[in-house]
Length: 130
Image (cartoon, rainbow, N blue to C red; front, side, top):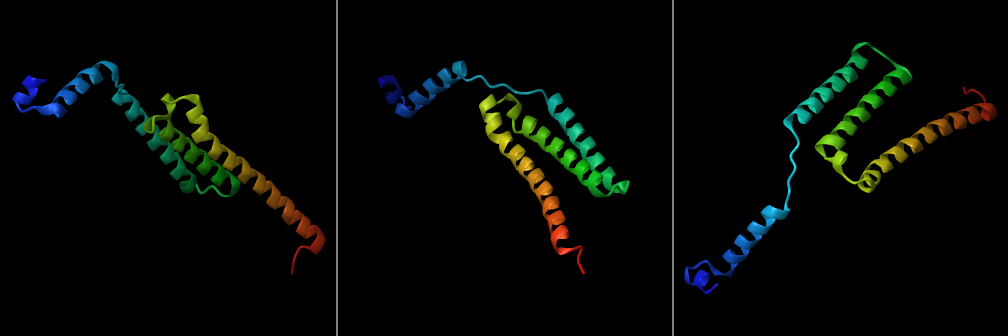
């Protein structure tokens, strides 16, 4: 240490070289192959093309919106799983991030059924309208 301060390195340089030596041993960084990302990009392109084809073929009603939402959820799932590295996270972390959107979809489905019931009830009591 006296030699390091005599050479002008100081205390900071000693700690940084010690930290770098220990970090190399304990820090393991895993990189994913570029092929994985390219395959996901191709799938995202295919799913986007399918989503545009729904409009191109002129589908309407529930079929149109169901297909668009399915393609949207598949694309979002790929992005979250691969690009946000959720596929390699702990199960508890997956549940914390994936479970709330699934519950929102369940509540939206419940609202759709409730809206139909409310509409039928209004028609039954108040008539079909003017």
